[in-house]
Length: 324
Image (cartoon, rainbow, N blue to C red):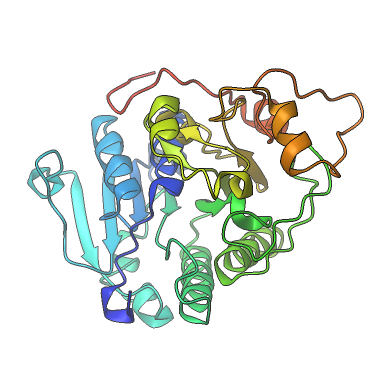
């Protein structure tokens, strides 16, 4: 994928971001102190992508005015034609250019947006050189800085489980099971590195600009566990720790009142057998965390932090049309 083909469309790995935004939308919008009215305008970067489309449609259904921003022209499909909705505005922009990100036609026209949902990014390492890393990092920073400039202090961005060494890595390394947010983030490839840097940029913005920027480390996002099992690449599964998440349930994790990173994954694997069998066969030297067990087909990711701080728990029964 070359620069002119950058469309900010994330793959299944990030599909759940869309629904994670649903909880974000359900919460009470902030007040405009100058008018005393609630701000109900959201900006979604990467609005043409598979995640972005789901976010846009859900936001419109909940009564928000949505400002979609994408590198490519407005995309439509049989189930996606927001251009006919008076509550949808679309801006075509290259967010790799900071001046373009700031210019009137991109953000300033919509200076009263309550929050930015940042989904625009390359989706995998590509040629493992510079394009993916540099683009993802620059786009994220430009969006954060533009938001700060305009006084928008609520940002939610898509990170990835690849912040640790997983399927794209030369050699995945795990220090302990199950994995939580205390696990070292030392990716050895450009995509994962771009996500780690994006998280650091978010943390810096939270401290220096009084912003709330949440980063979700999303696993492989799919319609159902059955779908994941049917489409699993068994040769690579061990390097992804047989993880997945139901796309709409993962989407519901999207936070609004904290500036931290969270793993978002299902509590079980895509493997029908015992997780202990997988550990013994593939990762026999990785210890279990004290007090933790891996019974049945327990997943390799511990999402306790998301449960405690976000009130999120995986719900495999959600669907794209769910109002839950």
